[in-house]
Amino acid sequence: MLKIRLRRPGKSVKGRVHYKIVIVEAKSPRESKFVAQIGFYNPINKLLQIEISEYESWIKKGAKPTETVAALFKKYKKEMKSKEAIEAKVSES
Image 1 (cartoon, rainbow, N blue to C red):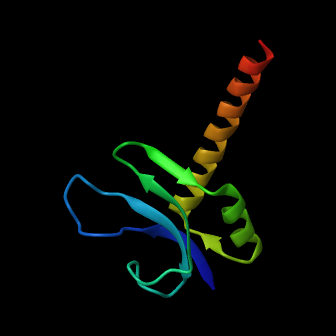
Image 2 (cartoon, rainbow, N blue to C red):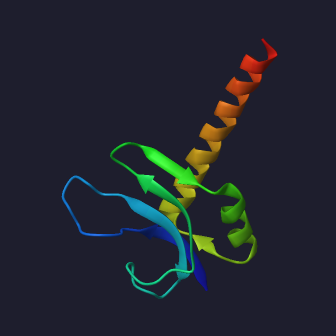
Image 3 (cartoon, helix red, strand yellow):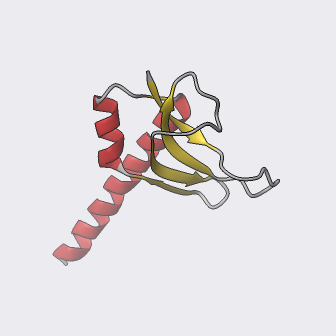
């Protein structure tokens, strides 16, 4: 079974944490090899990027997101819709 979860790459430096959003085998350790990377998350800068089409295709293939990734995706999708609405209003003017 595949999971969509956060992976913390590199050294653990206090105050400089960032994560990759990856597809991994469910029973593998957090720092193990991954199947695919579909985004990244930096909680310090509040920077989040997810490939929506990749995320949805992996969900269709049977991958299950963790609670954290599911919440981040929901937040990201909501932000993207609001940006599109703002761009549409600007282009109408």
